Length: 378
Image (cartoon, rainbow, N blue to C red; front, side, top):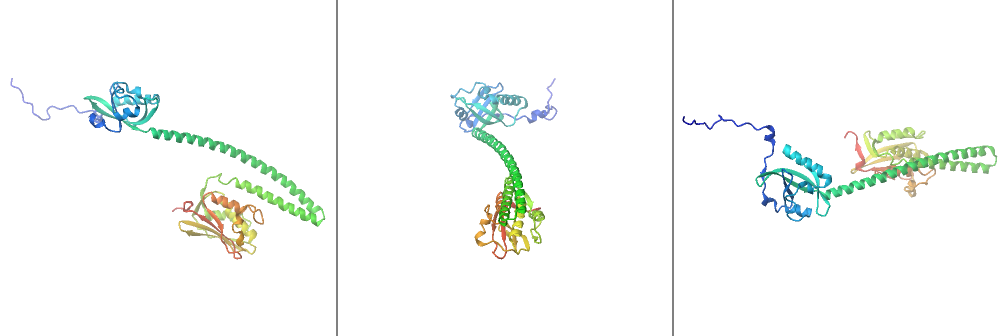
């Protein structure tokens, strides 16, 4: 029977590759000459897990004699903490054909370890399917990470200890203030009795001075209570107009009028105690302004910064006292309000000074840096 001619067409169909076969990476021939002189670290192992090749750069960094690594198990050079990871990825490579990047540590000849990011790739090594490992050395990075982690743990321990000490000191000062306050109440009570029951004008004067001193002590105790709260709560964005309104509602203004010309939505990043700054400015103006009738709050731009201004129409601050008024203990009353205010503002870098003209009223300027200033909704 004569032979049949088979057309070179689609009469004979080859089976289609499965999805897994279509996605499997095609091994490339291993080019020994190309990797021999590379500075990158390269290793090739076979399907049985035996090392077939390690380039000179890897041999040098691991410190083993030339020729020792090939023909030995790859896992023999893997640090114990990474052995399970490497073994799992070797098995995954054999079954799935590819694995994602992973980290592993290899042992060196001197017993130390080096950390690597491992990238695997299928190759043909001497016409046999094998796996090429491209190793990126991250030892120095890991050392730095370990040092940073150790430092972070140390700082956390210090912070915990600080917080514990701070809680104890706060508790002690709270109890002490309470006890001192109780004793001062007793002293003031007896002084009040003496002042009313004895007829000697001189003794009456002494009682009045003793009562005034007691009031100053009470104010100082209150100052310590407020001062220890500075910085306890994180700074927040606060609407300056609303804060001034809140302070004005608390301040003993009497007939003095507060004009709040601060724009709504103008926010400052400050310690939540900033309301006490505005309160102290109002309280001081009423106490020492003498002829004062009005306190005005306004805003001015100063380059990238802004200046919050509090000015009044009272007697003003004498030229020689413009900086001293911020010192603790200076002044006719307790001398603590402005000192406390400067400390509160300083938390977020807001400067505080008095720039008014004596006889024409006080003028306090709070310069807010650009980073601590914004307009809401912008």
